[in-house]
Image (cartoon, rainbow, N blue to C red; front, top):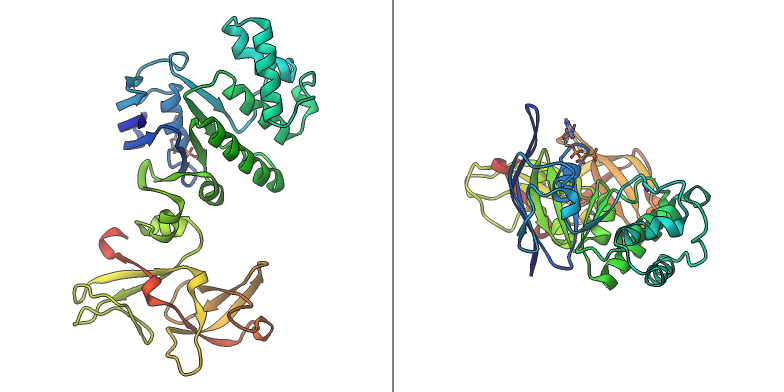
Length: 351
Ligand code: ATP
């Protein structure tokens, strides 16, 4: 069931249009990530949903109710910011209880609820501590508990993990996801971290320059990017500009794409570094080049290969399964192959 409808939302700051008519729907219980580079409008859209900034045009509906112009306190959401935003002079218990006390619930009920939330976030004995006595990750857990204390219909997370160090970030990522599943709370998280979005979201909304480029589940965004921007922004991608021959064939080296296009049309072929292989002897290579750099990345080695016809090096992620990695050296000439059936094709119109 649709929980949130964002219909043609525009936001202007003076002459600058930060949101250019954004539309999307969010299903009840879904975990949505707004993902995009700095300045693309993610936070502006989240703030419009929260009522912290009102849209210049368009309409927002929550649970069937028009909330476009409603102040934040008349909307049903909990929010967590990047900068924890806990009250430093209140204990952890008081921070979490804050909203519940405003509702004037019976003391015993508040105590029970806060204790249960403390257990949920893995800090059962920290109620009497002050935020300053907790680590960044622990403070963010408390901020999360405070945001869900009133069982909101919508949980908004504005880059909640970006101030934390890498290890805590990965751990908290899994905890937030687990909690969201348990509570079944509709959640929207803003992030510029593609890995975070891929790991956590049911659907990712990829934004660029105040517009939506693509909406889809992580696998679809990764394997079927709709535009070169999405392809470039999510994971690493190689590109090769090419023109179809008079029979409508596109080729890369000796490889031909297994589909026809308009003769003479211009395209970008794109493929992931993990799909690039070393060409076997006897097999026609797609590209020949010289290894510029080798980076050991644990599960694989990333080779940056300078190819004459390419302004940027071609990336090839090679694993021990593919070849004897000890034989690769910078400066060495290599021949690359790629499975043409797994390449993406963008016509010049969408580049
Ligand atoms: P980041 O990841 O850096 O936070 P973002 O995608 O969340 O980026 P927004 O904060 O939504 O981006 O900003 C979108 C654009 O709107 C930016 O160009 C920003 O400079 C501009 N902007 C945001 N808030 C205001 C404001 N109050 N006044 C003027 N311009 C603003």
